Each structure stands twice: as structure tokens, then as C-alpha cells.
Image (cartoon, rainbow, N blue to C red):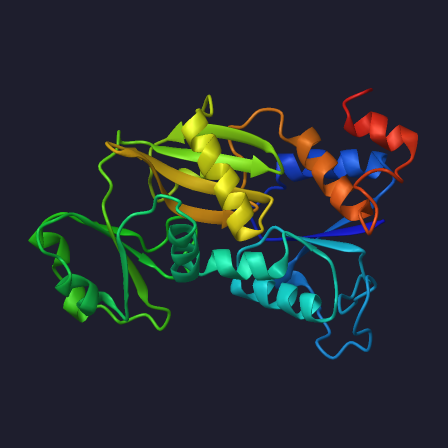
Length: 298
């Protein structure tokens, strides 16, 4: 089958080792795999092919399955257009669009009983500053990614200059700061496989691997609830281990899995099973050598 990863330019600009390993496994299983950067694509919006698996629009031709790895607005728009034509995506486009919107994602997790911080949304920095009452707050863009634009307000002088900041059209999320151990717990999911690492939060923390740790049962229960609620099967959670238990502070589709060990095989298996799944159970119609390969047999 033809598989297309819609990717983003990385920092630093080198190929993702994980995606390279996953692609090699999928190619050995008989799939035709390509990677397309959304910002480098030529996407024909008015493509004549409107429905079915052979939805095209890309200069390199159509694919049977698209895998949305990029979080840019352009990539999400292209994924939405492919979805509207009937293309298959992993993760599904509606789930990615909801996860990208932190207002919708936080509200959905809260409704499902997933622990999240007390949260409000405002139009801009002046309105966010007015919510400060001496209790520490976290302020983040509604559609931010990789920690960009996140501010912690713990004292009045943190607000200096906020009145002069230009308001963002997308709005700001204002959340109570969860008192944690000084490190985020990054939880990564592929289907039913779960990994976790700990690392300090910072502007460049997305470029650094974390320290692998065990996934405790309470976090496992949160993962099960998030999977059922969001419709995502390849995703990550940022969790702060607060005094009352773990609290989910961010949700991302198709993260980088930095610091995790042994992700490539389960991810390749999950993608393969989704790709071949139609009305049949996943993997039942796969050639025997594919099943052996993805089960870890050399």
C-alpha cells in the first residue's frame, strides 16, 4: 500500500531517526512509503479525485493512507481537505483538529473525567493579566505547540509590559499552575503500548530526550480514558505529578517519542494494521512474512 507521512521541518533540520526506522520496517513489509513536508508540497486543492482511498492533490500522487506528523496550520488544512475527499488518515483528521485546539481538547478531557487544571480562555494578554489574583497561573496560546508562547505568572512583576503586548487572534488559555516536582512526565502512546519519560520543561525541551520511567497504574488509567475520548491512537500527554495525583496539562497528536526505547516496531505494526484494515479484522489478510516481521521475527 502507498503510505504518506505529512511531516514538518525539524529543529535541527535532520530526518527523524524514529520515522526512518518505522519507514524501513513498513517498506520491508511491502508498503511504498514517502515523506512529504507540508511547506514543500504542491497540493492541488481542486483535484478531480473526490472520494475513496486514491485521494490525490499532491504532486507525487495519491496514497492509501496519510499519517499526519506535522502540527503546522498548513499541514492541518491539507489533512482536512484530504479527509473531506474521503482519504484515510492516521490519526483521524477530526481527532487531530480537536487536539490542536487547546480549548476543545481541555474541555473534552474534563468532560471525560481526565484530571486537568482549572482553565479559562481569554482574548489576549490584558484580559489574562486581569485574572491574576496572587495564585500562580500558566498562560499559553490556544493553538500553540512545543511550549511556544507559554508564560508562568507567579507575581505581579511577571505582568510588566503585558498591557502593551498585541492580543492574539487565537486567544489564550489561562490555567492554574499545578505544583509539581519540577519535571514534566511525558507520556507517549501507540495503540495499546505506552512509554513515559521525565524531563524539565523549557523553551527547547522538545529537542532533548527525557529519562525513561515506568508507567504507573494511575497514568495507565488516564491513557485508557484519553484514547477512548479523543479517538487518537498515536499521541502524547504532558502530565504534572501534583499533590493530588497526575494532571494532564497538554495533549499532542503524533509526538516525537524522544527518550523512549523500542517504539519503532510497535508503531510500524500499528500503522500496518490500520493500513490493511477495512471491514476485516486488522492484519488477518496480511502476508505471513509481514505478520512475522511486525511481530519481531528477523
